[in-house]
Image (cartoon, rainbow, N blue to C red; front, side, top):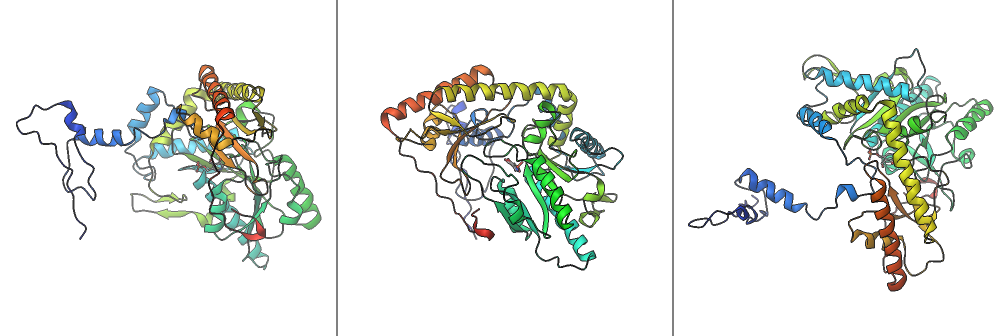
Length: 465
Ligand SMILES: Cc1ncc(COP(=O)(O)O)c(C=O)c1O
């Protein structure tokens, strides 16, 4: 039996009770035997996270950290509802269904079809559902044709987010990953000929990639696959990972074809909690039409009331992010989202220009679609690296990611700043000043940081993940 421990209560006998008594408590070593006053528990929880980063200054993350008061009220109103219980909370389900239809339209889904999609915990769950749909469709088609269906693969770029490597490992799909190269960190058509074949369940291309914020060559890849089909008779669908770009491209670049306007694009995911502007966690996956999400993946249960379809990986989850997304779509509309994205992009361009002008940095992204600034130090700087800068600005509270790029560009180190919508120009200038001051300090004193070693594993075709 594990030893039970008590939260040690302050000795208040014969003493004046002061507001500081709530701080005179020790955290028990094992499961607490007794409870404590609400105020005291709250004080312990709050004080334990004092040294955590300030979410507002955590610019290594794409995830939303701002909410207006009415949004918080909507969240509060819905946060004890379980999303999956459609029978009890049919209106949350109705909001979700309506938003799937709206997103299908926003991403230029074909008219006259039944849109299908779902809200998820984040883009990871959304990507997995997209990947599963393609695996199922591919396998069904192979089996119908009497062909071997035991070796599915996905073709994607070395810039892919970790979720796809997880998906391929967890769901037994061979990763075929096009290597990056120094100066080009996107999936292009360059390696497709070697990677694509009859076992390719889909090509995953990214809109707004994690490392530099750029888009893969979506249209070119699509057209290459058209030519491949003409040559070989093999038709390969595309999944667009629009975790970030899905809520930027429609508003800022309405004429840019990255979405369902390209017929091979059969599924798209996006993070409601990134540029969808909902605090964590919410993702979306939307299919070109109902039949792309293979019916075999759908389950029906009756244990929460009436018969209910379920096709998410998670079952129970908080309904509040869905209600908040609905609030935001109504509150901002297309024009509101456009303004928010434009202001963030303008700030990103301003920050990028200031940092490049300082002479310390080179920009890594050739195009600037989403508000992400990806920098690398000018090669003339030898006394310190991007990790040193990240550590130095942390003294001021800023959290900026420094990382080495994936294979075959691993010698390139990057400093990435996600210029989220809650930053105003004044704050962006403070950040630029602090980064430049950090460089000046490091010019004088040098740096000592080493990139953290990753547990790199070899996968098929020699690439590490
Ligand atoms: C391109 C891309 N795909 C997928 C994900 C995973 O998204 P989530 O954190 O919402 O699960 C991310 C997260 O940063 C991403 O940038």
